[in-house]
Length: 95
Image (cartoon, rainbow, N blue to C red; front, side, top):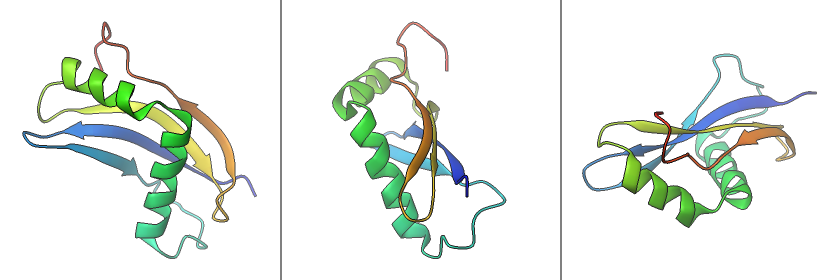
């Protein structure tokens, strides 16, 4: 089994940073609890990226109402990370 790939990002609102998980339209039926897998995705992302650096960069460079991509992470329902292409947003690039 190869896993499911989730795109992740940070959405900036007037008052908060929101961690966003984009779920593929075709997803393994073993993902039975949406809250649990979204929490798993978020935990695995922050284990690989420096949360403080990411949020500081988003705060300095993104406009309210935009979502900054952090890349993708591929997981199996058992929590195994199969692949990832995560990165801290670059302040000099348009997202």
